[in-house]
Length: 295
View 1 (spheres, rainbow, N blue to C red):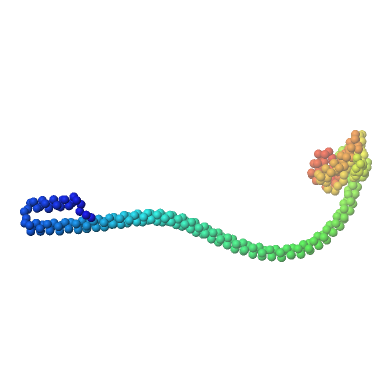
View 2: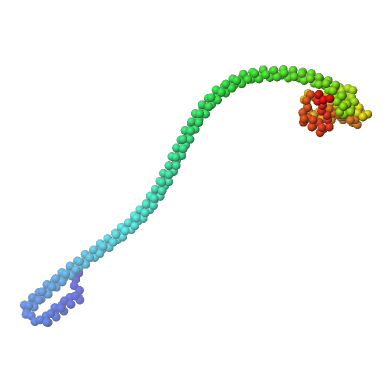
């Protein structure tokens, strides 16, 4: 750094003022001049030092500026680093949350696997039990089949016996039927006389043709009641139920009655035993039911 004109003039003025104030000899003047030159040289050196100092200060300022720029860059880098660290921390937090959820899901999966394992064990135990039961059932089935074979033979023999029994019963029923008809032929004329005032001499088995259909009647007879001709149509069964009454009425009595229009036609059923429902149904249809023991 050089001495400015202003500084130089100031120094000269100071020196001149000092010279005016004192009166010096030539030797003193030379000494003073020498001192001034030295002072000037010192000032020059000082100025040079100042210039170097300013250069160094400028260099320091530049270095400071670069340092600040680097610090700013470092601060920015630090800020970005902190943001990245924050983002990483958030990501880590999410990762930990995901890991916790995954761990919980894994725990539930393990629990379900344990439950499935236990269920599988119970299933295997049940299958083993079922297998044993199936073996037992197979043995029982084999024994049952053997017994069924024996039972089939017995049933076949029983079937043959039943067929034979039916034949015997049929023959017996036919015998009883004809026997019951004979009883009816003896008992009913007196019953008709005593209960209905009907006089009839004979009751016989008879066949009629109604609209091309042949109808067999166990008991048929013609009689007189209060001077009027009456017709008797009867059915003989050992045991009489309400269904028998309906069958006799609709399949025989009502059809044969059409052949004797204008005459009084009496419908009678005769048997060893009469169910109460048969008596009620006969009364509803206008028929009579008579047991063999009635007189």
